[in-house]
Length: 349
Image (tube, rainbow, N blue to C red):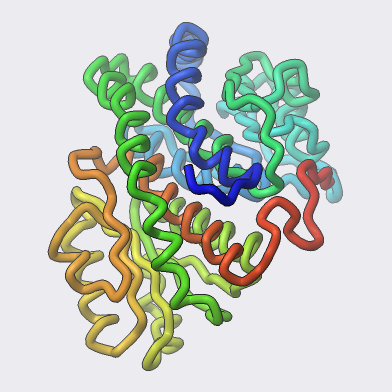
């Protein structure tokens, strides 16, 4: 770990240990939850979340849809709390994802789902929280106290719970074994992550950028953009690579920063081609990838570990984005543990 320390830095480097602890401690509970979900055979999942947890839902939307055939909708909590017009949920699996488990709007969605007879599940880092008490089923992140305002270890732990639940629902031991290897991949990445601190110096005066991903890493684009906004006050706009080309690409001009997540798998060719187009338009390209072809197109290449399945790559790919945001905050002379205007637990309705 670098000499300059902060709660955020410690928690970023703690992530491999958190993931190992989670997978060891929560495996039986995840199997039991999966069995109950299979028995109820919900037609779709309605998931309530805010902030970083919203991005875990974006991951769940792709993974539960692709691997389990379960459509996923992101809840609109104000329908439950402000308008008092909740949708019909009786055939749904209703999930709340919240690090604190304390936000009233997330709790209200789960409570209403239970009142309507839906199976309800809480994913939280706080056992005994209002969210955990409201749900039939409760899965813990086992991340320990997160002191930093900007969430890191609870985000990757949330993704890991979603991945483990998906594999358990499918009763797919090969997928569970692939997930067990992910903490080692994050370890390998963090062993060389300190070099990112040198890379960020050239972006010290960056005021805006776009972050582009697709498929499973649509969530990664949103989460990295959120960390850049929270920690560095850069106006970072996240996009699907497809949506980006339907209009926002007009933003691009000489020197404009474009960060792209290019994993191994089905999105590799399309994302590499997008980076090539951006380089031809003389943008400032930052590429997170294990692929030499994609990294060769980058002004700033951030190498990911090779061999990570695409469906698990968001757990790994977000980490250099976290480190990049931390390093940029430090380069700008900002306190990464105290972003302005933010607090650790936000209670909304």
